[in-house]
Length: 68
Image: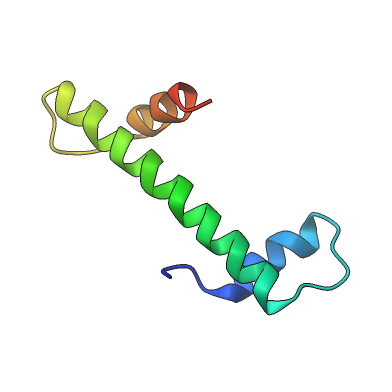
């Protein structure tokens, strides 16, 4: 797991959670990493398609729109 638990806990607290278990934070982190990996792969594919080696903000935005 690449994401640390404390930022995940903060996200849950900001969303209104009063308490967060370790297993809850771990599961959310796993799901976020899976989605972020797919988004990163699609962003990279869009950059390659455009003939670039740099992923730009517009690639990430387009990948996010395609994934909706």
